Length: 155
Image (cartoon, rainbow, N blue to C red; front, side, top):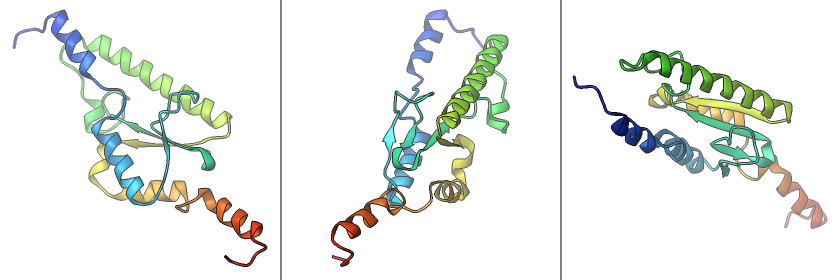
């Protein structure tokens, strides 16, 4: 196999998306269909979480196994070219991910991660539903406010 040129590698790396990836779009679609509403990539939060549920103070990251060093088969693969560089980069990504999770938790956010390899089995969706709790208006706060505003008449 012929080694890639620096220009080709650079073009390939520029094409790698950091948001709106297929796994992320898949997770967003399933959660939206299940009735959950969220914000995307809130820049004011550490790590710009993929899905943000402000009223619940919960966030979800959708991670690619290779890029974030998951301990699955896909995440454990080692690149054939420039392996030392890639191992160091993935280690930095993992350290950054942990710092971001800690900063979010320290700020009162609950954090969940969905891995790319999990998406073939529906268990991830059940886990996220448990993590998020009831669907609808952020744990029912809106419903009780409206009920109280109308004197409890159930209008």
